[in-house]
Length: 125
Image (cartoon, rainbow, N blue to C red; front, side, top):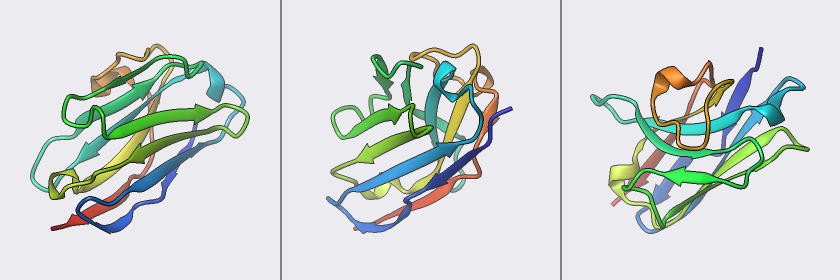
């Protein structure tokens, strides 16, 4: 069992940056691929980024490629999402997820077994 807690969300102006963190409980964190998803009001939850268990491989949605960076520190049981050049279309609740059988190109929700409660990111124009 893995419990995930996101933090770092908030209100930022367009063009600004935020870094989200996702802290995980459990000794098996380092064996899970991790993903970030987001859900905007009235829209379905969508994939943002994923990272392999080792941190060596990453994958991004086209909409965030070149602006967002996912990383992890297995010693701290934490995965990060650095978000730069934010725009209002990035406004959403951001969720981290852990998948026992997922890998760095897992983009579908059903591939992940554990989810955090989400953190709100609001980008003003």
